[in-house]
Structures are given as structure tokens and as C-alpha cells.
Image 1 (cartoon, rainbow, N blue to C red):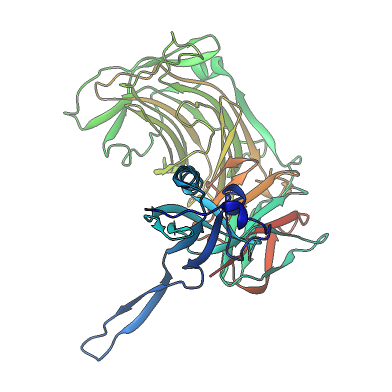
Image 2: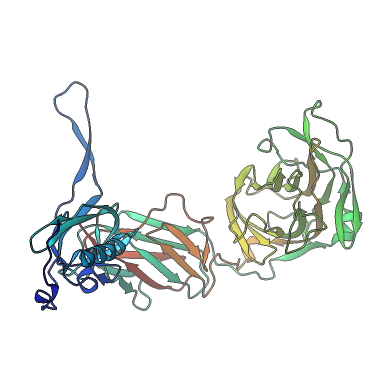
Length: 513
């Protein structure tokens, strides 16, 4: 049997014991009369898991690495009760307070730091003559304690360096918010031996002048009548099922749109041809000096979707069995491909190919979002491709061009179907505007970042946002989370040489063993 006493005789002091526990902002002592923390196990010790390797037949082993493992905090308490009913009521309240997932745990003698724990066990209370004692435990998968307040630091005007001070005992990831104050093509951040790179450090700041001329601006009627049928350079489709393709069929013209009217003979794969359909080809004209374009800008509109005609915005219906290819191929005088872009749809899977490489496009809803138009800027050995979606968002891809000095002679649009599969609900081509650049006279090409753009690196989640959208497309593959070790260190920021120094704000939360 439990023994009970008059609680009012022992409640007098309002001061909390040094190891009183706050769970998500509530101290148990302030919630349960007669409750008191006695002592806590697990706060002062943190075990490490050490891995090692044996080297040949030599004695001993070689150290490899150390890993801090999870910890368990066990709180021992006493609870004074007046009778059995009072005990049961208080114990129920206690169980409700500690039954938390990922709770913030703060002890009264260290109110500026917290642990993150999940209730793992509650021991059977032991009766005493004057009180009841027991214990409960929190499992902390993350073994460290964190500063309640985040630390922040900003750069002084026109400074590319920020001094950061970590007074904790463990390295912590930092989050960085960068607000552009001008056009910029590159953002690099470094902290100790970690770096993060976004954009292209070689991107120039040049502006169009009289050196850029319009070579042609073909709308749908011109494409239908002036572009040749089934006489072009087809896309390499080795990456698209590993089989060849064939020009055949016909196109039509209606409602200012050039569309596929006939895919031709839908033979099987006995001839080794898996992709077949019509093409339209433009022979690129020379400029007034008789020169063909080597550096150029091209923008065009496409219709490529499996969205059925009877769909509504509220209830979109897709033909999940459709397969199709809408490819734009840019080739030189010998028929060698300089660049090709393919929109590929196969049985519900949407893909984009640029020079045989599959890429992903960043958009809020890439599952239903549809590419509306494409703009290509080719300068030297680099090309920037901008995909404009139907919801108004833009995704940008940058690639290197191996045939950087080749003259552009032909542009071919190929609309393909795959074997006997359903064709796309829409596969069309509306218009194309083409400009030729004279490199010596170019002064500007729009840069990746503009004045007011915000880049946010979430250090804790290792995610990069550009203007609030998650964006990995232009992040260097070798980029690493920026870690701030204990002590004082300097974060350095680099931009394009022509850019103004942006506003930089760093936030981090210190942690301790």
C-alpha cells in the first residue's frame, strides 16, 4: 500500500529545484502540487561509437572515425499525495505531460539550452512512508542540447565577409539568406573547408546592342508553308529506348498552330524503328554580311500534353497510355547536331532531354505543369535554356556545347510517336523567333540572378530556395552544408565580378555535448 501525507505542509517554497524539467514550456512542478525532481541521469555523459579497421595481420587496429550516439535522460522524482485518489489524479496528469514526441526539454539550471526527446518509458512508482517515488525516461535520438535563442549575423555594407562566433562545443550548420542588389550570375559561399556554389562563375555581364540582329520570326503559317516536310536532322534517340526514328506523316495548320495531322504508317519494330512521325525543317538564313550564326538566341512555343480535350481545370484528365516526343534539333552544315532539346512523354512519365542527358525541371507542380515555351541563349561553349511553364514559373538549365564554333544551318522540329502506343493529345509547334549575335558587339545577356532575387540556404535541411522555390538546377554538385565549428570563423561570399555585394544574413543555433 502507498502511504500519504498532507501536501500543504511541504508546498511552501516557490523556487524550483535545479533539475526541474520543463516539457514544451511547462514545468512539472508548476503543474502538479507536491511533485519534485530528485535527480537526473544522462545529462552529463555522452557515449561515442568508435569504428576501426584491422590492417593486415598486425596487432591492434587503426582508428577510422567517431560518432556520437543517442542519449537517454532519466528523471527521478518524488510526488507527495494526500490520499490514493489524489495520487491517481496526479499520476495521470504526469503521464499526460510526458507523453510527447520530439518534445523540447529544458532544465531549470540551464534555461538557455534544450534537448529534443521522446518519452520512452515510465517506471512503476515505489511507495514510501511520506511520498511516492518513480522515474520516467526520454530518448534523445539527437544527443545534443541546443541554444534556445538563434544567433544571427549580417555583413557590413559592401563587405563579402562575416565573422561568426560559435560558443558551443559542436560544429553546427548555418543558414544563409542572400538578397541580390544587382544582376548577378554566380553565388559562392565558403566556411572553413566547406563551400556552396550556385550559378556559373564564368557568366558574363553583357548587353544586347546593334550586334544582335533578327534573322527570322516565323509564326505558325510560315512554319506550315515555308519549313520543309520530312527533310531534317533527327534527334539522337539512343537515350530514348535505344532505337532509331523515322520521318513520315504530315502536319496541318489551324487556329494559328502547326500540328501533327498524320503519323504515317504505324508499323511495329520489325524495321528497328521505334519512333516515327513528321518533321518540319527551317534552313537558317545568312545575315547581311553573308555569315551564318554561331552565337544566337532562339525562342519558340510548343504544345505537348496528354491532357484530354474534355478536361476542366477542376478535373484534369490525362491519357496515361500516350507516348510522344517533341524534339527541336539545331545542326550544322554537315548534319552534325549542335544542340537538341526533347520533351518526352511515356505512359504517364514526363521527361526532358538536353543533348541526350535527362534533366529535371523545378516547378511547384511538375506533375501537372506543362511547358509552354522554350528560350535558348547560345554564347561560345555555353547554352542557357529557359523553360516557361503554364503557371508562369520558369526553370533554367545551363549546359556546355562541344561544337561551340559550328555554324548553325538547320533547325528541325520532330514530332514522334512510339510504336503502337496512344499518341499525345496535343503535339504542336506555334512560332519561332531567332536572333544572331555578333560576339564582339554583345554587351549584355540576362544573368541568372536579378536585383531583388533572394537565395536562401537552409543549413539544417540542406535545401536551397530561390525566391521561395526549392531549386537544385544550378547548384554545383560538389556543394556541401556550411558547418561552423566552435570558436570564431569567417564566412566568405563571392559573386560575379560585375555584381554589387548583396545583403547577407546568417542564422545558426549553437549546440553542446
